[in-house]
Length: 128
Image (cartoon, rainbow, N blue to C red):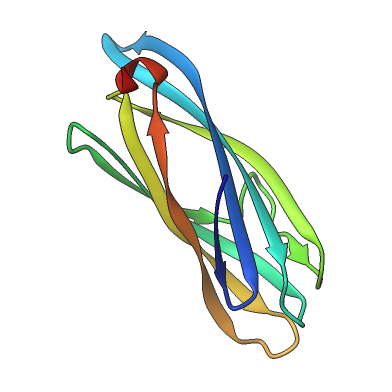
């Protein structure tokens, strides 16, 4: 598991390889990830949106922006965590993801970014 803390918001990521298959005559590699967002700050925060950069060893680069995560905009109180799982497809056996969550401090109304550390997407056969 890899983690990063921004302004008291700890983002931890765990990944797994789910297999490969052809989609529209293109070989795709499927990965899932579980993210734990822990509020170690003194204030309640809310996740408003996400920004992802997904890239692979074939120089494919995808940017994804969207509201919340998995249809939610969680409010995370001090000492609490929010956990969710999602996934992605890439067209090579090696890649990575990184990004940030746009957050708001409920107490002050200040917006900030909680950074998601760069994490690897590696199919097991690619590492041999």
